Image (cartoon, rainbow, N blue to C red; front, side, top):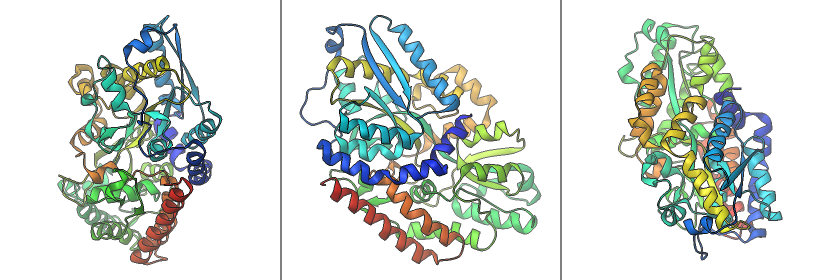
Length: 472
């Protein structure tokens, strides 16, 4: 299975959605059971440094849980093997696949209750709010300060670092990072005489979609998966927060969803009208369905994850281009929000030596050399900026233009409140509340303003329920 297929199955497969939909209440109850906090586990314990590992009986065993599948899982294991070989007699890492992302966080939640958590947890982007609230982990920034010989956090891509930061402190180190892109069928755009220089904005993409459908009546202008991630992307690209206050990045976390600002209304309305006017192709929430429609020539443009590059390659599609995700806000504040997963070091129930050993593993996985190898194998974007200086990486980008577009977008995305995404332990519940309303708006069954208001109210209720059950 490709990295694309693996990541899309995790995001939009029915089993994953059902499992994830049950998590919000369970996560909140787990916080109550373990006395979680909103400080990311940084409270009073001293953060261990190099001496903790040096003075320990060796080898120190590190357990790692993850939800990566396919080529990404193999690429991860390859790096773990490399790390184990380099640290023979000192550290032994034992990695364990826990199922998809929803399965992984569900098992971790149970482990929090039983006191049997892994040393290192690789968890999806939207679980970050819960992991912060749980108070089980050591903040990455604290570990970096206590272990200055390991990873330099300034080498992490600002857009990726931004997503996993709260109260100005980095909580976890990103491992595998994806971003949304615009994919276009070159031949269809040429036939419709679309100027590609207009495709950097949402308004330009909408106009191009209409022009294509008018010129090629049997072809839809655009398609995108209608799932929760994409409404977060439209919001970030408009340059405004998705939840309040401050996208949940300050003390106390998010208290409500913000879905009715004028920039959001304009962006959502632009996309919804393409669908209600018959210009957009509705393939539902599944990114794989959107990919299939695009490769079959049913639509000339597609908004999809950067992981779709691998899917297009597997499908043998030629004659397409990948372009940056279109913005509706100012490039100085607006941009795409990342997806993927990050690496967290568990504190509770783990020795100081184990925490430092886990940090050394993370430092290896986030290093430029490991990130270059992992990215080439998995299709994810490298999070270490030193990869940009690698001659072999430059050669790879020269031969793989879509990845060059992704790499540039990643580097150019501003680290702002809008692009940080919403940080709340109720994030899956928020998505579950938003998507049905937006699907009704995109299908023309409900006016966009009514759908957005209803989605905001339902999602805010999910956040409030989570906070109440978590004792926040």
